[in-house]
Length: 354
Image 1 (tube, rainbow, N blue to C red):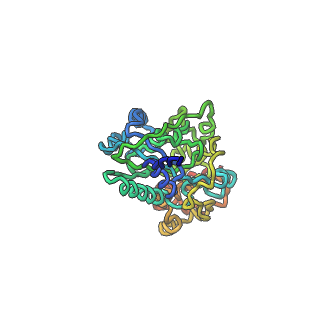
Image 2 (tube, one colour):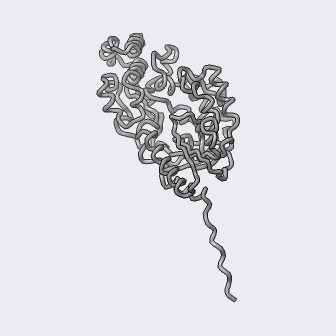
Image 3 (spheres, one colour):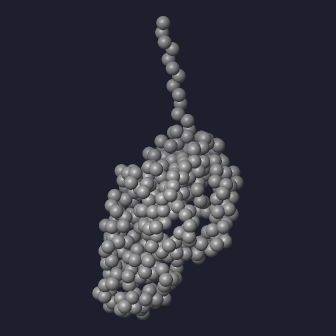
């Protein structure tokens, strides 16, 4: 008797889609229905009403679109959530004891994630449109009114930890998130389960007490917000807490115990740190003019803050350093054409004098 051949099972479009996504550098993949995070809008509106967004007016102006995928695109049925790893090979807090060096957040030490992630998202979306003829898609990374973190949690990539960022069992806190919205009704993944438990490591690590409660962030006290988004003098009461952080802050992320499972082998090569951004000299940063700034930070997400904010941040770091060798350059900066730079220089000189 001849045995009948077993039928060969054809991989689902979801499985093939995941394989394509991983081939384009994504380390995390999941799918959620468009209405999978219904609590997002209410939480966002409460956060905005409390003023926790500071002067990020763009969060407020498109809140209705941001609160739900269908608020942005009524026809969307599924959200494909994707994560690209930038897990660091070295300790993100290693420069804490080197006050003459500026600390740049791990995510900004390599190539601009906007470009890298969006290019890969478009490639995956093109494959889906070619594979499923009636598919319509839109791709988003960071700059659109999309709440990537709750959507990624709904799609099973992880959960929003007490520091409000996504935490992955496999990649820790080091994922760039992107999303593909589609009109296809795809099979959804199981949402991520919160396993923060009683841990408060991220809350305890914050130098400026930016967490009024677990799972709540007041951006107005967050060093990432202050050094990147805030365009003006940084509140005096928060300047000492900034230490030598000149662009962003990794403390709450680095403190998360789940990072011990993050494998640097999964990190995308585009985000490997550039030598000049891994441990920049404060002296060099304080001497930057506009042309120098554009040259040093070309191809980096840092370029968007402009020379004024960078030198302001470096002046505050110099004031926190205790090193009087910064006095001559700070004295010159008190006459800087940027009022926020001059203000930071005056403050730094007073700190060094005391």
